[in-house]
Image (cartoon, rainbow, N blue to C red; front, side, top):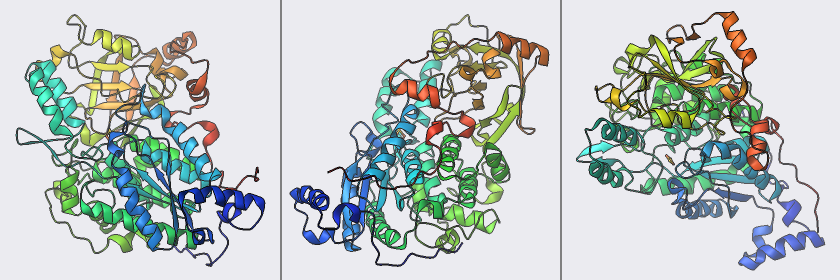
Length: 580
Ligand code: FES
């Protein structure tokens, strides 16, 4: 893909604040000078916003202030003027009811900060799950030159000399406690071993997936995704990112130059190869919606169908991000896609180079971490998109995290009307359920929960876990943590709270899952389904004020990315009038 850099020097948008000798220009400069900035910083050089999602309540991003200093070094070195700007930080581990409810709010807030403040380009400093997509969505909406810098993953966790993966082992240990094979004391002891350094989750969960998506889209420098947070090379990456954004501003290299349909197709195939999180589906659909790329759920199935999962990381495999980095990281995977004819090699990246030029010479240093194709974890690793009368607009399933024997399954539905109903019943020893049943959870979608919580991999009943069974077919309109696993149909659309067929599934109905044929079917007649839908009334809580109201009124379905409808599309970064 050819990109023609803009002429330099030229007048940048920040000069409408900082240039000139009018009263307003003096006003903007004078207040900035209370920080001791020398006059030449306002001379028309690129002003770079370091948009920092640092927060002590977003622990995965709590080290970003340190990295931001390295970004500043790079910006100064390249002749730019760095300004650090704290932005809305969506903490996956702490935000209630779920961080996903605030992804769109964060993107809206950041978008307005980008538009309303004197910045010519931005470094998007992110890490935890929702911080990466929310800032990418904002950048796509404003189309200001932007580059992603993730904080990097935590070091490997170890408990009793076994690797412990963020999240993945939380599910495993909690099921072991329920099954009686692990004590509470051991569970508590294991807790500290899971997170032993700064950084984001060390599995191929959503944070690592989204870092990989940013790199595969071409929005981060090559190699960014896997460098551990505490590795000195993460600091080097920060400094290089700072240098690069200055040149991007001079060249006027914008998100819309990088985020083409082929970039999204590269990312979808990369997601399949890494065994990435199903959350990437929602986030990439939302980012595409902001930049005006026509990406659909069907693109996920079409592009991912023939891509083997070759990255042997938890939750699908056995290693963690630290080992992925030592093996060569994401560039090795992207090179493999290119060699297999599964990459748009000429896709432009923020480096100014094509994707292929960046990866063509890299080497795989550990074929047990990045596997040969004939040893792939799953031959067809892409996210599967299921359709049928139970999911007319689609549902997704991650084959690499599922049980092969359950890929074709017919079972009796055991229905939970919402998450509270599930919590009230799941530990009841008299619950009428066995391992052949299909667990159905309603009202956990974008409107219903609200915010679409990561509860789709609902835990199994203790009486089934005690038999040594660890997986059953589960269906919901919820999401699933990228660190989780199981034969789990997620994002069922339309969601129950919007009157989708999921809303009218009853205990005792039979459901058919047929992954090879991409089918999710409620085994009742069309007439019966229509009659039930005609009688359906919403049962989820409807907010009447605040952001919750705004969200419920405007959120779109998971099948299009669960963005707020009025935020879709690229609105640009046009500056409003001076107000002084
Ligand atoms: Fe923040 Fe996993 S909870 S990256």
